[in-house]
Length: 314
Picture 1 (cartoon, helix red, strand yellow):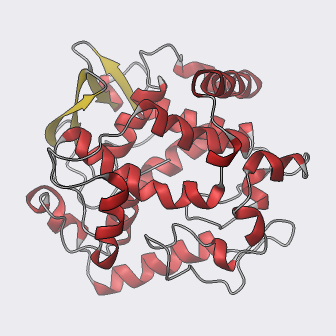
Picture 2 (cartoon, rainbow, N blue to C red):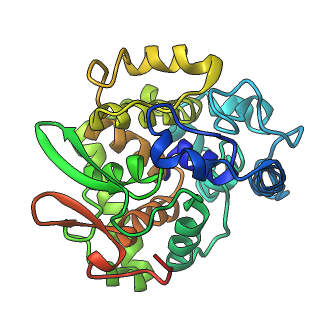
């Protein structure tokens, strides 16, 4: 759903961002006490055990992942299945929600129960991903994505906007791109719309089973974040010893010499959620739709700039 960078500013684990320190650096440093408290809360929520679902053993995030808690397959009760095609795995467990089966395999795969309230998920996600660097509505740096021959602008009011704005736009999920925000109130309709979108993505991109490995998708999320930075031609976040490996995969040499993210890249990330259950892809679609809209001039707006405003302060 959201960028890894946003998660870490939310946790307060960064003192600043390479190239964006003036915009976000101070807000990302919440102090050691807050860091420990937030970290404990998130780790518990990600690794929390539901005996009917998959879980981690031991209950810790994998320190070898390319980003904190991004890929815990090595410690997962369904470790072997993390490295098999998702369609094959889910075909063997047709009545199991994929987020339950792979619960806690990555920080964004957390099972929320069989009947998710999409409206509540939207509000919870917005608030959880909002870092202390949030500038307020349209007060952030104006950036321009160069995206498959198009220019798209947005205000970088918070760090997760860099990923999520372009992600929603690429999938066509923003308000103003055809999905009416009030449709979320009809759960069965929203689920069906998600199913249709998932089928459309597969018909368009024809993902091979070998491309649909959960462990690969978990590892690639950090790369997507870096490629979104490339599309905006701004410096990417820094991540210590993993920088070079991530840069190599992302083709990163500089903000103007790198691999930009594509619609197919984002589509595959979303399609993984489709395969894990339409409830999960529908929740992702709801979050992306309710938080932002496409305005005239190919500008992405947020909250009161849009027809529908979720019940959050902005």
